[in-house]
Image (tube, rainbow, N blue to C red):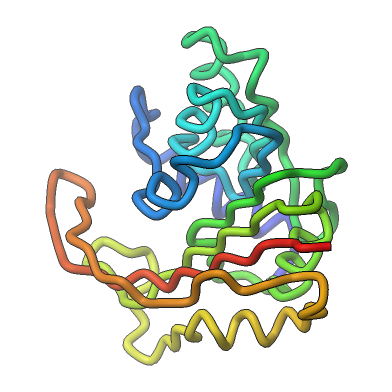
Length: 208
């Protein structure tokens, strides 16, 4: 499918629901980043912007990207309204065609899934190479299907974190896997609905 189709899908996805006024960070981000020294962060697929705003409040300089102009514009407005405009740069990128410039101390990719063609391994490999020394790449994927997920395909397969790491084909002399597990949690979806879900968590640190 074309870039136009993907942009239309994700713009429609965000435009169809009210703009989030106080988006929350992902649980796995908060538990991973707390304690790290703030630096430059890249949020791939920023969505409603909860992760980017949470990082900015804690002193990180955040570049937040999404294929949806609706999501990017909403996040930029939220950042300005909270006095974080100087700490959050929101950019529209189709990661199939472009990747943000610069080096980062943290790159996070939460639920970077799409019904459109995307060479995720190449995107995440580019993210690993964008890390500065001692920087971390945090990849959090779905390990189960929530009742409110846009993808209800019963045959969908969720690769294990270690499998994702192998697919990145990173030199172990320069990148180290610090975490690869599948914790469960109670998630809250639209309308306050809750369900137990599984996250696939991969944390890679650049050592050289």
